[in-house]
Image (tube, rainbow, N blue to C red; front, side, top):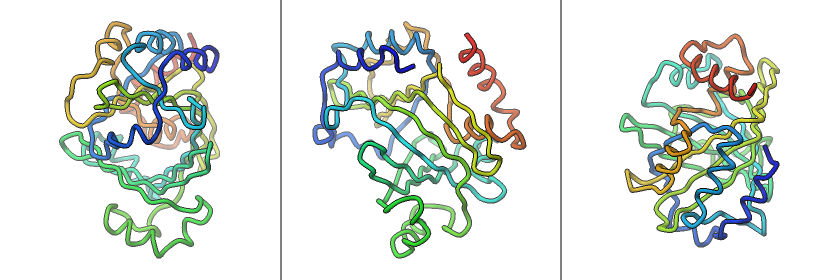
Length: 254
């Protein structure tokens, strides 16, 4: 998947984190699209003249490691699988390029808006030792206490972040996804699938929407936590993800 992506990323004008500070979008609507490698290459060419690309220390492709938490009986996973609009995800995310690590809580309400809250932590390994900061944080923004949840699955991926010229939206493109389930010890990876996520505050016009439609890149819900879990833990209920899993399998085996 990396082949050619780095070259196409160099064709877009850069934007710094400081210049992006006005578009945090911590309370937003998210729309996800699933693309093949060929579609992603075409998309990166088509957005020229409409989008900046985030650049940090000369790097335009970032690397991430994320660990998701859940209860012993997978309450968060099952709420998503059941189609509950109001749901929560708790994760620790590390930005591998600089080592910054955050405990993050994402809540989706019944209006399909996502609120994300986070605090910096030293590392995943020290999470349970940082109670002075973590306990009040979770009490304020999460449904669960720290002793009610455990790490369940981890993933690694690369990300490109685009910002439209009007600075009203962000597009993230995730690829080279790898999963490891910490309970089942199952592993899987997606080498030919990219997840494009449009993040905007409300329904503001987006140049990307027309491009995605023209390239026949289909809108599709895709939770890295849920899909990764379904791929790596065969004991989990997965009926409602079957259509997406079949689609992903077809894309991977083209």
